[in-house]
Length: 460
Image (cartoon, rainbow, N blue to C red; front, side):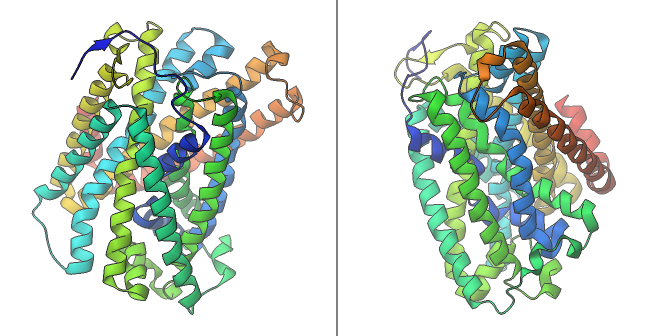
């Protein structure tokens, strides 16, 4: 694929708006139309819109540390380089890098699987047609190949896809949602009453974790583009805040439209349809509008993993440069400026991991349920991995503050603020651990049984 040499990533390739839309693409506006609305409705019921507000507040506990670190450190290594600034080159920082790589790889697998899953779901929901079993596998493979080719060809192409996809998704889905809200006879503020959660607090927070909290995880992927951004110590922190807050408002409104699109008594049936947004849009605007918006959302579904794939490649590139991984990963394509060897490794790992999981799940549960459980499996792993390296980064900030207070002195912060942040973050981590553990027990071990154990065994 052309000449490859040892070189730096291309400097000043990304401006502020490019970073914003890369972050938006990673969060993926269309996820509310495809996946996160389904998972949130399944566990939180009528209170699904509230999960997006709570999920945003939970995610903001992570933003403080990332925001501050990004004002001082701009590296392709991202989070593990933040940790390294506090603990030096140590097993803690290198382990964080490996966890971070898996955390960035998971969304590539998830997005590819969701894309493959949605094709038979759409055919069944809208046209009552059953497609051959191999179609989802081929569609999933196509997404992984797409991610590899585009990321290999350089960050500029990924940025262009992110900008186009983000604008189109937000406009189309927002327009449909506003129409449903104005036409629906079921508008109510009771969707923000946590007491109405059909499964209590545990169900509500499970809906928060597998819905919005998982969807928002991508907000910080842009820290990996620090070596390629213009004025990275200024633009990255601003891009993170702008993308996260704007999409939190957007997705809360869309989730509200989906929830009040049907009578409260029909919400359980809506969630079990696997495509609640599609059903509601079809009800109010017809099947062809619903299909058009779905196609736009699917465009976002294949654009989102571009950001994570690029991030995962840069983690491998940086780990190799630091001597933690083999040196062959420390290569930059002369023409495209991409970490080309790392791109190939990400492609191969994502391909093998997705196929193994999909085949096992389909064997046990059939195509639709099998692909859905594949998404759940990797979403939980992604949540745990991201929670892990965010927790390490957050605690690293406190250590770094104590070590060199002046390093991160900002007028609105002092060392007391950071220790308070650490205390509150520990509370959030405890609560998340409880709900994740509950979910693992009741959903994976209870519902997935041997398939979960078989997948873990094969991947290990």
